[in-house]
Length: 198
Image (cartoon, rainbow, N blue to C red; front, side, top):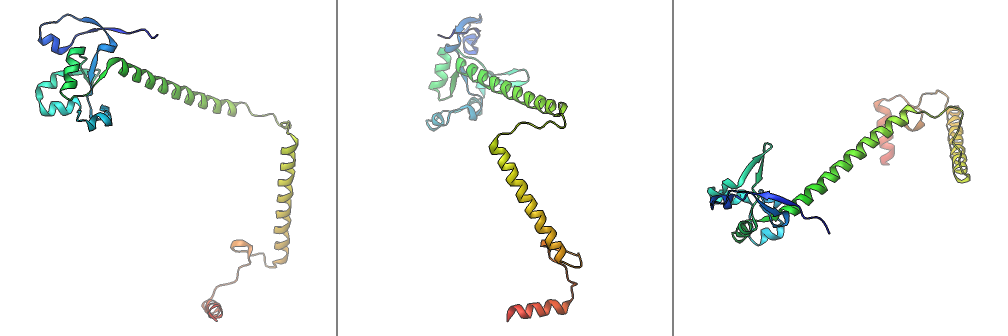
């Protein structure tokens, strides 16, 4: 079983009630209001739950639940009693333990992506730094040897066809598609257009 993380909680509602000392609380019993609308699950939104920012727009007194931490806005951590009261008021809250798990998974994904990108960069540099020695060809099996021979035969045939065409064309001037070019004049194009329409 996973170890339950304990934190020293100072709930802002408890402080208003006169309980100013931090209370050691399991992370599974600490609730955090969803600060932004995107952190409220779609299904819960359909049931009428809102984010803390939307609740502050309705009642400015709730603004004390937003803290600045490292230059970012964050929701205050609430005890189970007051977090449940937020749920009853249709303000969505999450367990701190769930939030910490999400952050840990996101950090793992980010670290894995960084590791992969560093590995690919180093693999590319290593391949460029260690060129294959000249004159030594890698061993190939029968299937790849047959495929290479077939490809070379096709290339030889194409080269022979191109050479044969160039010998039959006398002037050596060629346009697109290997056809010899003819000088353009209006009368020739009109004749060709008239011949094509007949």
